[in-house]
Each structure stands twice: as structure tokens, then as C-alpha cells.
Picture: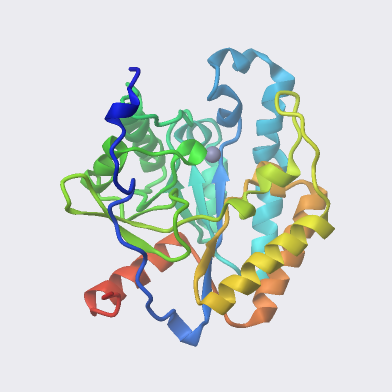
Length: 294
Ligand SMILES: [Zn+2]
């Protein structure tokens, strides 16, 4: 559908006001939502199903189950940290052992679509992606409360469906540094939004592939950027949300970088490193207690 500029509404695209300020638990100054996206090969086929026959292209996704995720889980055990893993239904169906290993270590599993299809407004697959994603995770006894949109895109139709499905929180919007409550088009309350931070998307700095060749950046650049973002966020009393991928951060050089960054964050001693569910439930508790009032 082609729209005219006459149809572009002249109002803020997000009807929710700026995020409220409220205290973090345990006297912490800031929060980090430690989260990973498990796409595996669905990251490769999502743009074109015929990529399924391009086996070297597919192997970039296959690294996740073979090496990347086990290495990331090992690191999280070493540092005694819990994280959220937004997992596509395809990855859960193709690699059931991968989901089981995440659950065995006590991490949260979130919804990340089925074939990782871009949820553009009006797309025929929006409901199907949602339903099949729930079905795939249900095979592991999981009814996810968190959702991260494939490609980080969303629309009114999708976020209204998330509320209908009982999702607690989304982690896709890029317009704040604190959690807030979404407002739906009918002006009712939507799900909690935990905004992720683009600078913590490891794919942007750390993966060059056959179909997406780009320069990758060394630890000196990325660690410096991540520390600056975290330190200023601590000063603001806000939160950062990571968008890490085991198929990127599970590579040797990237894992070393992630270990350095997580050790730095732990040593700050004032950052609450938590799963999306923990942060969203804390927000809800503050909301119920009236401590998120503007
Ligand atoms: Zn993804």
C-alpha cells in the first residue's frame, strides 16, 4: 500500500509519555537487561527461504548451536549471571537441545517470532509468526512473558496482539533509557517496554558474513563504547538492554570482549544485572505501589 504524505499523522509516533523514574532494587544505581537473541539459521532464511540451500551462508547461523551458545552459557555460569534468550520458534524446533540447555541453566526464554520474519504493518504473517513461536516454545514447557521483535520492528497490530496473548513485556522500542508502559491505539495500557540499546547489538560490530560483508571492530573500540554507554547510564540511573547473539558473541575474540565487559559491569557494583522478566516485574511492582507516578 502506497501512502501519501497527507496520510502521515502529525503527532508523536509513541503516545506513551517519557518513562517514569523509580528506584532500582537492592540500592542499585542502574540496571542492565542482559539479553541474547537466538536466531540460528532463521537469521539467514528470514529474508529468502531459498537461502536454506546455500549451506555456507547457513553455516553462519549453525555456529550458534555448535559452538556459540555453549560458550556463552559457559561464560554465564563462570560469572554466575542469568540472562534472557529471545529464541525463534524455528531455532527451538530445529535445535531442541539448545532450548533445553538454556532452561537447564535457569535462564529466561523469550519469544522472537518463528521464521524471524519482519513484522511490517499489515503483513499476512504477523499472527502466524506469533502463534507458531508460542507452539514451539510450549514443547519445552515454556509460555514466554517477554517478546523481542525480529529485526527490532513492530506495529500497532503486533503490540495489540502481544497484550492479548498475555505478554508481560516487549524489548524493541529505541526511544527511552528506562522501562515504560506502552499505550495502545485505543489508549488502553499495553505491555511494559524495556528499550534495548543499539550500541549493544554485537552484530553491528562483530560479524562479517558472505551476504553481509563489513569491517569488524576490535575490543579496543567496542569495549570503550560499551563502557562509556554504561558509565553515563549509571550516572543517569537508567538501564541498558543488550542485543547480543551467541553466533556473534560466541566467537573467540568476541567472547573475550564480552567477558571483559561483564567483569567490568560486575565490578561497578552498582548495576543490577537482570533478565527482562525480573526488570519488567520490578517495574510492575513499582507501578502498583504508585512509585512510577510522573
Ligand atoms: Zn533476531
